[in-house]
Length: 324
Image (cartoon, rainbow, N blue to C red):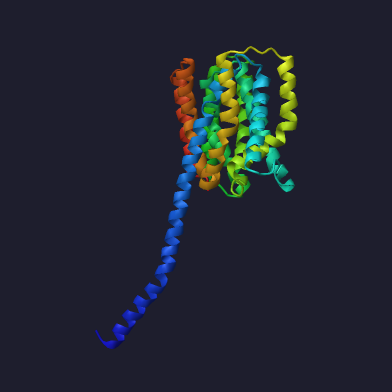
């Protein structure tokens, strides 16, 4: 090799040496991002695990308490716990005023909407296994809200999968209604619960990017206390209350776990892993709820229920992969 070739090779080597730190830095950042997404997914799954027991817990609670008292009272108890946690951490009880709008959406979605609508559906006769199938569309609804709020442009496959999932749920509900109009009300309430949760999850996930997840749900609960506390007190006096171990355990679960502690890892996971990506962990929630319904309540569900749940899960999985 001549001198000119050696010089060129040395120059190329020096150029690579100069670029190596930058390349290594980019690789490190990419690796850190992947680990953050993985942690986010794991945290979100912990939240889903906590939420999966909400329907059985609600059914147990309604054995001794009025459905409205269960729905509103759980938020009041969780709100008092939020006050204690915020005070202990020396955080302000209320969020910044310019964020009250998003926090109001969280409150309407997960503090009031989902507990009230799902509780009434269960009170009107919907089984926990049936409710689990209906709310299997929640991951797709959450992803759709995230897409709209983030300004992304989903491909046609995303919307086709969403419509297919909706068609599967519609067919399932028609098969289960047995031709009575009254049977449609629980399903309509469950769909309302689904939409409420999707909005609350999306707004909470967005806020949790800048604020710890536990603080996001705590602020939402505290903002709701002026409504939840007096309504709970009134319902406690005006509605019949039967204290049983099962009712107390069910109410404690939905108030402490479903309404409060479960949101700690859930919102943190959405923030770290991305609302659409970490939201995939919701795919496991209907199946987990079916297992709880069988194990705790002895519910039996036939092949139609299982087939509907699996069909919806397939559709939702496609929406997650085709979201952009």
